Length: 440
Image (cartoon, rainbow, N blue to C red; front, side, top):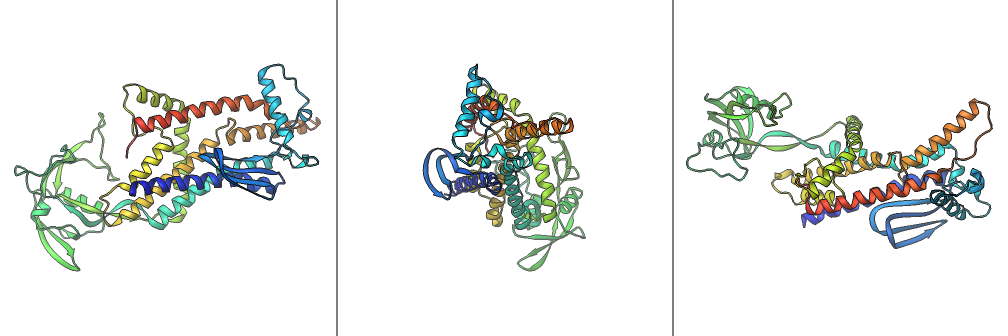
């Protein structure tokens, strides 16, 4: 049930993100006078629709996108000089212009999209991606500032180990009679205890306590814990064991072989309880900017990542945890988050934060991906509008007559090719996420 709840959360937020993306296009288009004939969430057969005013609103069967139909997207033949259609590419462009012209009602040519100025076209086409960015800011704001990220750990103990296991022991390894008893358990520490003083030093954070424990191996140390509202004095003697060397951020230091660098330090055998740390609201935009840049670097290397995906799916190469995933993979992540256990009292909060962060990154990806300057993506229409605006500015500076609208219909063959390519990658991702999934 928890797994299905996670998948349901993903589907609902995905549909909401798609719907709001299209709202980002539709609202400015209507404000600028463009007639919007259709507003649809999804592709394929229409499941439900209702006409309000001059726009048909509906939900389609395949929830993998959406669209708004802006009347007059392409300038008609006469507006671009009636270019000849000698090749099949030319005929595709001509057909696109004619189909666009047929949508324009008599006397409403002024309401066609191609009539908009360059700045207005940019506002309309950027409205969708910017809406995804806004959604990401809101989701991350709620996750990081209202709830808090599970990046911190408290000084309250989640677990007290019974024995000292080797650092390379399997995760499911249990204690045996041959294993050395863990100092924390031997001293009487219990899950739920809060360490308030260690070796005469007041403890304020888990990072501080970790440093104190690692520095006190083989020494008898007084410890004060708070248990059921009362303070209890204990004495522990940490053992010296091989454990990963930590950097200033508390992360394991890796050697040239990619494995953690081991060092002999004091070990107590206790695990902290997870804590949530809230991020100041003013720092959220910086977090969004950082994650947007990370997404840009992924998109920039997308061809190479698709090649790696093909090799891991149909070859012997193992699929990495940093592999690109599709909607099936993201849905699986959402389900695994919902089904995960062992998070203690903060389990629900941690799951909600994880869902919100994952969905925020999905919207960041939609923002970045849609800005790729290729049709039929929004970035392709942005590039066409900028080209048209640049031609007009050059003509104005040179004192030449104002050029007519750009013949963006010539990009239709490219749009078809990109659509087919994206469809193929999408199918590959679905197949890979089913037969060779990335797990978290």
